[in-house]
Length: 596
Image (cartoon, rainbow, N blue to C red; front, top):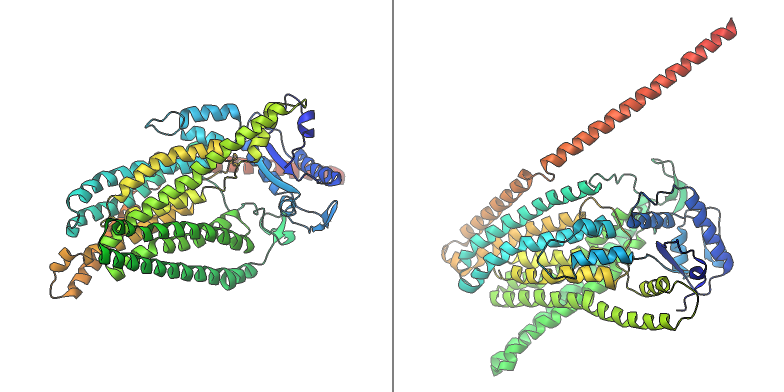
């Protein structure tokens, strides 16, 4: 696409652009003028705090203001009668869907980015990440992800160290895995509770620990009839909740169930492939057929990744169509849809092998193949391939800039052209989802394949650097977003740890060594396994209750802050009451004087 240089030709040398709004090449002048006037009128309502706010915070405010530009009395976008508007419609969203605005993205600060890279990933060393610097440049949401990735990787090391000797020395003695499975239970509970405390420390330091969600602004994609919010008294789109519920239960839920059925159907095809490969190996017994035994698992792992990505697009479309008012509600419904499908898609075959086929050898083989293949595919698709494409495009842009003879700021022009062609960072959703599935592979069947934690540690050491490279050099700079914690992902990880208790107890109860202890009565075995499972779950919940979510000093500081806020409010109310009494007294004297 051809880029016009008029804006860069006339910009002052002191001007530092923060956000780029790319228009289509053939947008009419009256449309440009109308949009510019709407943006300027919005800007005049605010204060100038450039010296007080960071660049990331300024970009976040600009994004917030652009997303909250809504139609008033306009019936259409000027110059484009087919682009209809109604009161309350998001102007930016209409411009994007109409193709008049191509994209909106914040620019990188090259000097600050270079400093961040030097302390982050350019020098390979086993050291902590500069989380506070990441937060200052990318915002709290991305900083919390990298903080959690680092914490989770370090927390996996004890599991990897303990699992290695189990893998090497006591492979078939499942009864000895009781100790390892019990450690897994305590480990999964403690690390999640300790993370809450560390997260509270970070977000308190950043000033985002206490965030009020009750008055969250409507998300840009939310549409409805313009009305008055009864709580805030502000004008905003209103949409009946019953319509949203009808869309969820009559369309979204049946679609998700259909996708789950299709996933199970593909799983059964995989088992047919496994049976074919096994029969071929039994008949020939050659070396190449022994290698062929791993091919069905590898193919199935690739198919799982493709299905997960396709379903993600469908889930996003459906969740957007449901028309949720708040961004938090949108994210919760999207995460729920994706987690349910991904959990079944990735782990259904493992549960089937473990509890229906009861083939532990095939379970170990499938788990190892799924884990390693998914990690390799994620590294290639998320970092290596985009980085190679971006480097190739960078060379082409440099050649164009060198051939350019226009009197413009070539450095700024090169930066804008280069960054506008970069991929868009879609948020931390996929990154957390990858860690969630990895946590499932490590915890659900740990007593069968204790080496999973070691592979996860190796993957995450490279993941930290590849994700950092992706954020800094491969993708556009994302708009910063304030966050108090990792949100619904905390609940997702805790739910997975509960499921892991049940699966590990069931696997140990099915082992030949444990079954040999109850040769006559299988009912006694089932009752003992259920009793142990309940005892371990009780221990898990006791640990979760005993470890406070916030450290003591943070609780005291928050209590002090609340007390000071109440005292300030009391003083303000007392002052207001005193002024009202003075005013009433003054009016009373005035009336007495008039009567006299």
